Every structure is written in C-alpha cells, then in structure tokens.
Length: 238
Image (tube, rainbow, N blue to C red; front, side, top):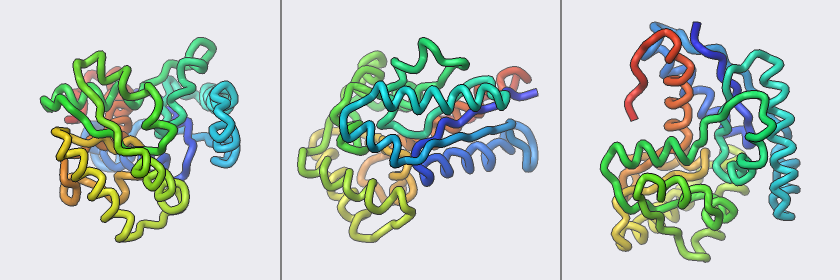
C-alpha cells in the first residue's frame, strides 16, 4: 500500500491546493480516482502569525510539532508542510518529530537544477524572502537566489496576507506580481520561485514573465512520489 501522507497545514488556500494536487494527480500513478491516504491538521493561521510577528520561531515549531504528533497518531508515515515561511522553524521540529519530513525548498531546488536553471528570483512573504530557507537549499545545488526590492517584499506580503489567504484574486495584484517578476528577469533571473503556496493560484507559466517553480505542486508531487515508492512506481515529472 502507498504510504500515508500527513499535511501540516498553515494557511487554508495553500494547504487546499496541495491536497487537491495530491488527489488529482494521484491517478497518474495509481489509476483512476486513486491517491494515497492523506490526513491534514492545522492550527488557526492566527496562532502562527502571533509567533511570526514577534519572531518566535520556537513557538512556530511548537505548533508544527503539535500537528505532527496528531498526524502520526492518525497513521501518517511522513509529513509535508505546504507553507514556505514556517519552514524557518523546521530545524527546530525535526529532532523530536515523530515522523520524517519533506522540505519544500529542497524539492524546488531539485526541480530547478533538473530543469537547468541557475539564477532564480524569489517571491513570497517578507519573512520568507529575508530568511535563509531558500538560499541554503539552492546553494547546495549551485543555484543563486535574487530577492525583490524591499518595497516589493512589503507589497507582496500585503497581497498574500490580505488577499490570497482569503481566496481573493484581484487583477491589480496579478499585474503587480508580473511587474516584480519582469524586474527579476531584467536582473538575469532565468526562473522565478513561487515561494508562497498561494501564489500559484494567480501565477503560472502562461502569465508569468519567467518560467515558474510552483512550490506547492512540487511539494505535492514529491509527496506522491514518496508515498508510492513502496509499490515500485516511477515518480511524477518535475
């Protein structure tokens, strides 16, 4: 049987997209309408934001570990978190986690390297963009990371936290993202990381000035591949 996937969720829209991707694309590995067993747990986003606003990543880790323990009791074999920002706390979680984790930035880095990219623009919340989550994982694959301007980081964070996490997708916000990515392209970036799990809800390869690295779906596909490895089937394409 495929392994049981545990989703440590944070924001609803990103977690829902990850869950839907696993269910929809599971059929490519397992047959019509099939997918691995999945359990999901989330604390209110407000609890995470209280910790993030005071730079308390030990508190973030406690919330993640609480979800991890619940998911382990539900039978999950391994865990994923479809939220880039709170991966800053993952090193605090892993030593006492009841189950192993896939790392979202590692999956993005592997996909970028496989596609032959070298210089990647990074979009996401200011807390993510100003962290080492992506630079560290990208450097291990000889990839470089370019951050948007401080002004762009602030506006992207506002769009994510005031619009996207509530499922509000405004044409003006899409235009702003496109302008930011066009600027990253002018800085010789050859692809852009959609480093917030809600960003793929408005941006994709068809409307982005640069090829996209969809962190949400890349994590979901990595989870599918891992869940299915026990029955010897090939992984999904990057």
